[in-house]
Amino acid sequence: MALRLPRDAASVPLIRQMLDGTLNSLGVEPEIRDDIELMLTEACSNVVKHAAPSDEYTVSAMVYDDLCVIRVVDTGHGFDPASVRDATPGSENGRGLQIMRALADDVRFTNKRENGAVVCLEKRLRYSPGAAGPHFIRT
Amino acid sequence: MPDKTPLQIEIDSSDKTTVQLAVRGDLDFDTADELSSVRLGDGFERVDVDLSGLGFIDSSGLAALVRLYQRVAAEDAVLRVVAVTPYLRNLMRMTALDRLFGLPPG
Image 1 (tube, one colour):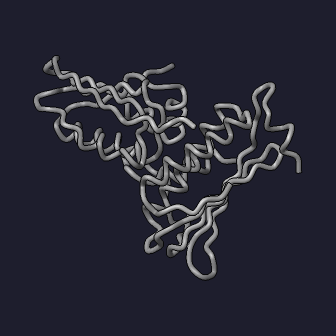
Image 2 (spheres, one colour; image 1 turned 90 degrees about the vertical axis):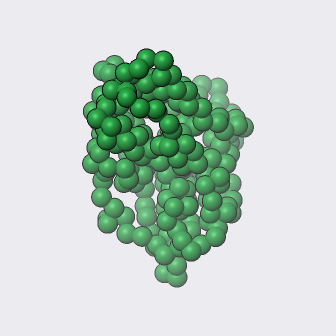
């Protein structure tokens, strides 16, 4: 699935619930879905907060066998993940990247040559017993 | 597809020294400001926050909790998180917030 979304706060719960609904239909285990919901939310809310001046961004999610690959692409000014420090216990910000790194099996941040950033998140899936997904997702 | 559960904040200040705060629903980027701007009254010494009814929380929700913690500390009072979901406990450990909020062991 791939969606182009307006860069506003309401887009974040929308895409989170759409992807969760899809993964639920495929029979992905709830714990894995919770992790994916959260890492996707962090990637999208970063775009809404920081990717000025773009008006829109795109989210795509692909499932290959037991791997879910999510790409969040914006047309803002890009950013350097190395410049974002981990949060100290009392600080308000800086936990988004920390959470993505902890929950995803692989995270990559790249800046596009023109303008904008790409966040690519990968998560290994586990399916509930008897799930529909594994029978028709074969690449 | 499940609908987003609206954020509900319940405040019980019947005890003069301890404000009880119960937060339910989705505490996220979209709703976090509602928590950090909640009215707590005055003269309290403790704020006990029950998060066991949360459906979802993200880093913006955690940031709102930290802001609330700082507001409470500025009044010379103490904020504690008294109940969490297992998922939230993991998330707070992951982000080193468990100690700040005085999370009960479990």
